[in-house]
Image 1: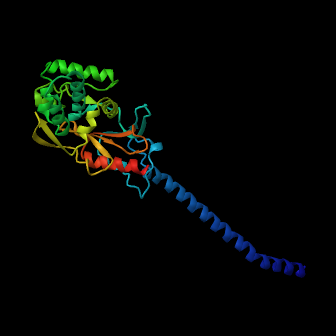
Image 2: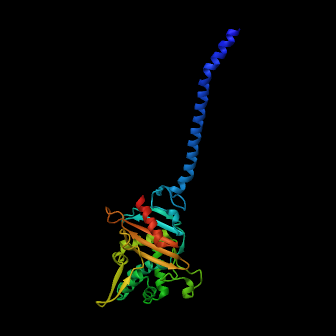
Image 3: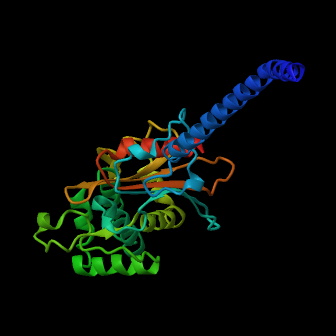
Length: 301
């Protein structure tokens, strides 16, 4: 009996290091698995912010990384849209936020004022000069002057008729300039409004139907002639022209009600001469920095 007990004790002593090793190995494995699970949960919490998914942006079109210059969350605008298109209607939305929200558009209005003047005032001598003043300097007097030929009411009817013809379903014009109602003694609810999406459609029409449009809005300084004499050099209100090589032109707008607004036309794909990219910003606190951010996001894609 004593011999059996001795053998049993010897067996236990011999196997003890083995079982201690097993327990230590199991503990390490459990700790490692727990650490991996914690890392996975942490990454799942970080990735939505890292990938720029928030603020209504489609996650499938947002590819920001920690090293990226695409900082969509920093954009102050209430609404924005970046979209590419060509003459064959190959359209693609790259980034957007509230792009179908109807908002005041300030002097972005003058895009439609220009289009109506070009289509219906073909024989008026001063129309080219007023158009240049209106698009480059965003001159309100030039826009108002264009309505005098048929009267402001008739001109606004044409602007709204053209909006319907182009399918701008969330757009309406109460004046040809985009100024706030209180500036012209109008009821507070009678303010020009549109959406980033509608403005993109209007811009596309202008590019392909009015070749002179891009020539006007693309110049940082525009020499204005009358009867062969230089009468003024207009300064473009779009400070991104000349700063970002891909920016061809655009239109600015700002009022107290509308905030800072901006439309820019970019040429990003040299392989397709008919493809353009348009960026629209509505109700921004810093429209040019917002557009720089969107430009970086497009370049990072």
